[in-house]
Length: 318
Image (cartoon, rainbow, N blue to C red; front, side):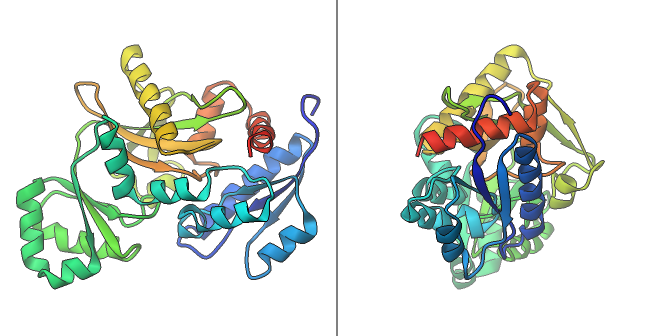
């Protein structure tokens, strides 16, 4: 590693969320790539001794890769900020905004970007107003098909595409398994894409767009992390003009939400070429089947050099 000085980096991976295994896989891949670049890396599964361990080891940089609420709801990131230790990724308040899909959608909508119409329903509201009447109203107001998902969460856990009224009750139950609030969203027919946005020192930049084509039609948790269940096209099969529109929107949304260093913006591109914002991921997965590494490699970068550049820039932009 000739270009950068070696850093002492602690990668936080694991946690207790539904996405623990994904986090561990991401953490190990990051650690291996950074180690190959000459950095000194420790993977730490956070627990009751986290703050004491950080104070004792005093790393040059902390790289959180805790997926799910454990790492992405902003609490841990805000706590890290109070330690005074540099860390890679968005600050706590920005992460909290992005973590709540309904709030992120509203901010993006107010900024003039398209996002599917949606209604957020807590379990209490759903129960108190009468589940049957609420479900009937949702079908009437939003129309079919529609998408039901947890209002907070990642990795497509608890996400269902609902095509008939009979499928809606089960979809709500699945969403509530992962969060106390469900987001019921209009289904947009189009090309599912994701854009990795990273900053290695020259400001937020979009990597090649990844097009997602799950073989069974739904980009589920299994389709995300089991090789062979989804076809990916990087760069996406979009015209040059539409690709520029999508990439520009992703970088603008990353900036609008106050994210930094690394994010992944998920969108649907309709037949007219309009990108519809779905959600922002402040700590995107970096496993062997994840989308950000695919985008990095499609940009003719190596994972090690890219992660090293991200780490160096994160240290310089605290």
